[in-house]
Each structure stands twice: as C-alpha cells, then as structure tokens.
Length: 428
Image (cartoon, rainbow, N blue to C red):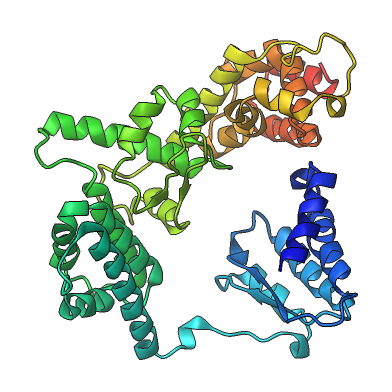
C-alpha cells in the first residue's frame, strides 16, 4: 500500500531516533498513527500485520508488551486488520497468548499438520531451489532427479530449516553441487530426532569449509580461525559487519571474509563488508555453543571463552580510541542532541558504539571477576568520563546506571575496588 508506506516514511523522518524509543512509542508512531490516517478512506482491503519469531524477544517483558500493543489495534474501527504472529511455544509466549480473550485469538499448532502435507511442501521447496541451481549452473533438466529429492525430504524430517540450510549448502558448492548432495545422503540419518538432524547438517557445512588437501597442521590452523570468527559472531548482542569485526578481532577484513567464504549456508553474509552478518537461524548459535550438539570438537566454541575474548577486545578498542571530545565539538557542555547525527556516526564507528554498550555484558557472560589492576579496572580508572561521553553521544546514556550496577555485581571487592566503585557511583 503506497499510501501507508508514505505515512511510515514521514514518521521516520520526523523522529529519526525512533529506533531508540520505547516499544510503545515505536508502535504508536510507526503502526497506529499511519494506519489511523488510512481509516478515513472509503474502502480499504484487509491489512495483515505479520510478526515473525516472537520468542526471540530479549525479555519476557517485551513479549507481554508487544502482545498488549497488538491488542490496541482494536481502536482502529474503520480498518479490517488481522495480526499474524509466529513463535516457538515458549512458556512466556503461551501464557501471554492465553491472556487474550478466546474470541479474539486463534492458535494454530504447526506440529498438528499431517506429516504427508509437510513432506509435500518440502518437496515443492526442494524442486524450486534445485530449479534455480540448475539454471545458474547449466545442469541437465533431469538434475538431480525426483528420487534424490524424495530422499532429501525424508532426511529433513519435516524441518524447513534443515531443507533451507541444505539447499544453501548445495548451491554454494557451485560445480561441486552434486558432490555436496552425496555428502548429505551418505549419513542416511533419517531415523535421528529433529535436533540431531540440524546438528548433522551444520557439521557437514562446517567440515566443507576445510579443504581436504590441507595437512593436519593447516587444518588445525583453519579450524582455530574459523572458531574464533564464528564464536565472535554468535556471542554478539547486536550484529556487526566484517569491517567492524576486523577492529575487534586480530585479523583484517579480507582475512575474515576468506574465513567465512564457505559459510553462506549458515550465515547471511552481505556482499558489502560494512553491512551486518547474521546467522540464518538462531539454532546455529545453540548448536555451536553446545559441546554435546557440536560433536566435532574442531568446531565447538566455548561460550565463556568467546565472551571473555570479546570483552577484552571491546576494552582494548576503547582504550585505544576513546578521548575527551571525541567528536571535536570544542564547546564544553554542548548537548548530544545538538550535534549533527551524521557527524557523530563519522567520528564513532559501529564497533566503538558496540564496545561501549556491551563490554560489561560480555564480562558477565564470561564468568570473569574484575579485580584490582585488571584491564576492566584500569579502563574505568582512566577512561570513565570518555566512556560516559561515548554513551551519551550514541544515545545510550540511559543504560549507564544499569551497566555500572552490572559491573558492581561482578567485581571482587577490595579497598581499591571500593574506591573505583565510589568513583563510578559519584559520576567520576
């Protein structure tokens, strides 16, 4: 609907900090108000609002807020509106849904669909994907054959995420696409449970990143680099680009890009190195950090070690980069909102903003305890005011108090630590 698109665009232009506002404000400005402007029209088609993966919200509180906001669409009397929500059946999600009056909700459980219906749809998905690969690579019209497709449907066990990962893996094989199909069929793990099926295909993809003609030392080195890069990506609290990662990891953008060259089946890797990398599905993170599921030890990532490395990298970046008046305003007391946002973005790159927001979060997840003389302790002693300025300029100053409390809960108390804490609580 072009009109609705225009109204939403106007709202974004009027409130350029909308991404930092509360869920309620975002909902009012980006959804309710634009829709209300349409309600004066004589005739409108039914509008469908789709919300995917509600279970991936950061907190149970957000789930409750979002569902309450969805219910507020009842105020739009002149619009035929439907809301379509998908989610795994996590307890907070189920509880929140059951608070909605039964007359106003309809729950459809995917697991209740007949297996033959799911298999039929999976077959269509594989056929369409292979048609695209066949056109790209110039394979014969009969490639790879209906029997192969039926076997892949059987192995997928009703999981579209398995099928999608398999098709990306095959497509990225290019001339070796047929060989990759054979690799998937060799195991014949159709009797395994859904989680095991995912683990198997993720392992197959990762093993495909290691060249068979490497010697043992080369394989060990490549696996170590792959673990470091993938581990950093999956423990991030907000996605970063290859360019940003290169400032947090001890390797260049080109090295990171080369390391991830065969990982497109499991990661969304944009062509532009300044755009964020994301796993295609959250199950990959669960797999990579779970030693029982990632059964090939060459690829398993130690959760705490990855967070420790990222915490230290964040602090090192800030200690190397932060300085008083980082935006060169040269007018003490200037409010952050008075500074041109584009100028701030030019002076404060995404990786530095990330480091300022999340270094303590990584410390907490690593299980480390900051102590007197530790890197974290030295950072706060020497760069506290610069960090506050960074958080203010990037629009996250409201998170400072929470971050300090989080740090306080981690610290090993001593006289020096107490002096440091007192300094933080007094604002420097």
